[in-house]
Image 1: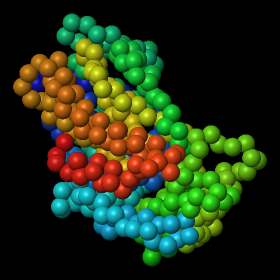
Image 2 (image 1 turned 90 degrees about the horizontal axis):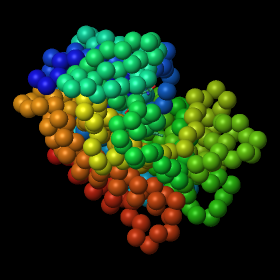
Image 3 (image 1 turned 90 degrees about the vertical axis):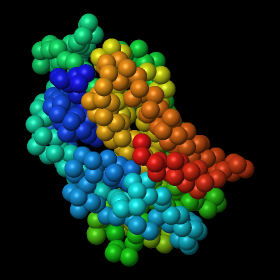
Amino acid sequence: MSVGKVLIVGGGFTGLTAAIALAKKGIVSTLIERAPAWARVGHGLTIQGNALRVFRELGVVDEVLAKGFPEERGVTLVFADGRVMTHLDTPRTGGPDLPPTIGALRPDIHEILLRRAESLGVEIRLGTQLDSFENHDGFATATLSDGTTESWDLIIVAEGIKSQTRPKLGITEDRAPSGLGIWRAVTERRPDMLGAIAFPDGTGGPGGAFKVGYTPVSDTQCYVFVLCDPVRPANGLSDWQEVRRLMADFHGEFDFLRETIDESTFLNFQEIEWIFVEGPWHTGRVLALGEAVHAVPPLIAQGAAQCVEDSLLLAEYLTAEGELEEQLTAFHARRVPRVKGVVDASLQLAHWEQHPGSPDADPGRVMAEALVALVPEP
Ligand SMILES: Cc1cc2nc3c(=O)[nH]c(=O)nc-3n(C[C@H](O)[C@H](O)[C@H](O)COP(=O)(O)OP(=O)(O)OC[C@H]3O[C@@H](n4cnc5c(N)ncnc54)[C@H](O)[C@@H]3O)c2cc1C
């Protein structure tokens, strides 16, 4: 084995799944997370089959499925007035024996991964951040915010898209705006409401959302997303009023959802950024992983899926024959084409969201092709 002592920086999906995948291969790591406590509330998440396939390998798929709401029937696209436009089957990217996708709440999935990591002996230090690192001959040192400096065989930087360590690895790419913003809300649904994505009718009503959609996350709840301009207008509206305004042109089930959103709803707005690092993800014994090197607009809901695929494969490479440098180089070469397919498709879809009249716009085809390409194992 090329590594025995591994530091993982970041306790999101990437860091936790890397810790679990390594522990299952006999490498018990230390994970640091700068947040002083784990968030217990959060948004919905669409988990595609290929992420479920990774969760099965990590030994948590039953718990994940129990917490989620399976979407066996694919995606229903509707017009702004609520009429059904078409229905798209979602490819089973995790194979025939897993649902094509599930909806779930992020904190639930995070909690499952956290418990699994802890049960495998991963040491987790909250409120601790990586301040700096140095590569040496045969080891790397990390200086942490608690003032300690320690040696490691490998440091995995799973710091997310805003990673501050990334440039210190010689990576020159930085996060960039996608031109989109997104509101997300967790709210109620009726039992007959099984998920939909709605498109505006182009008549320029009072709303202004590029698109709205919802995904069930349980028998009674769903998460709603509203794609819109990246800048929140200074219109004097409170958050829930702004979301209602953006949804004003969308009817049918969206009338119901809009009315459920009020001052008590858990809401969040953010500009959507992206990054893709095509060149090396490591320098010496320090490797950037997950959203630190690839983050996409969430238009085919593959962000976290690609992160957890990284983690599973990395553990395989690190426990195969060979030196660390060749393992990390081979790992990167294997991941880049697959991740790039997701990045290219997501950016194309983001472009079409902002230019709905594009003569070549064919989002259904691009989405389907991108997902079908993920059916073979990573
Ligand atoms: C609006 C939106 C919707 C999305 N929807 C979906 C979806 O439906 N399905 C899907 O698959 N994906 C989705 N994604 C993508 C998914 O959320 C991400 O791919 C995934 O959460 C990234 O995980 P990560 O662990 O790489 O990064 P993060 O979740 O950002 O975790 C990084 C962690 O590192 C910590 N950290 C940072 N720097 C340091 C440091 N120096 N020291 C210690 N700790 C540090 C941070 O505090 C953080 O906890 C969506 C993304 C967005 C923005």
